[in-house]
Image 1 (cartoon, rainbow, N blue to C red):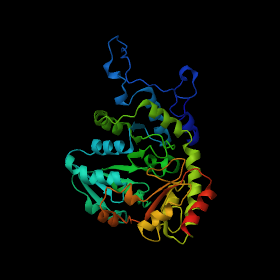
Image 2: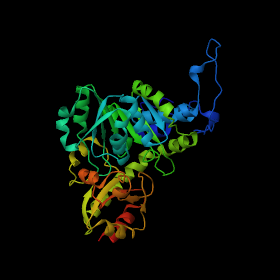
Image 3: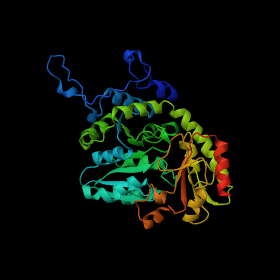
Image 4: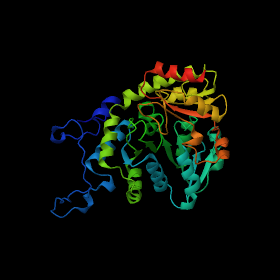
Length: 388
């Protein structure tokens, strides 16, 4: 079935599926084989250019999930990996060469920030971090060896939305590769490639899979950029095993239904939190109080399932109060069917020094919440009971 011109939810179900169906199975089978027999070319010679091997991410399970992700992100190609950081680090190293420079927003996921700050220079690359508010000053940070600019569509954990139009304009005007982590909105709420970005990255562990049972990543881009990164990626060995491909493939089929519910639920929960006496500030792009609310309304189809708030008290008091929650789990990660909460200072951004966190505006009392699929009123009742 040709699916590229169909609507989003239809692509989630049918995009990338084998045609004809394998043994008439309506669910993509798991090809739990690391090794495949080498075939012959039309001339009858052994075709070593068509080797299938799990580490090369080109088995039937990989090819199906690549096509599905590419279609829902409205891109030419995709490449899955064993984690979000495997995709991010491979893309950065594969597209930014030795001696080259990248501009990156300062308010990033802790793993990405730590990789760029600590490991990138050791690998002969340069990075300059810029505050989201100073995007108009990017020309002053540009160097002769600047190769790319890296941002997040919604930042982790302060949920800031950069001036994405200006980032694209700046990148195109200066011949830079524009890279964006699109994990938080997911393709349901935002598609960076048609917006003008060259590369979109995902921690597929989160919303794409949606069931907290897979660790995976994805890179989405033009065919030429995927082809450029693939050799390095294959040698680094960050492949996704076939069973994980199957679970990711299965989870993605409900992505639209899940994220649209989480959009609606998170907006209602964040509004209720604004009225709680033990909440100093609620951070959610869907609220009018959010500094980037207007651009979020303009560019996104939904505001996502992530929210943050600052507890009115110290970190010890926050931990004591939040332990009384009955529904959300205290756990890292996000985007699953169950609601989770965590203090980023002790989890996603624990690798940063307290000074670096404070510079970024990440207080010890900041709490990040991933809204799941529980009944919205049950979540509101649970949070308001604890935070009033």
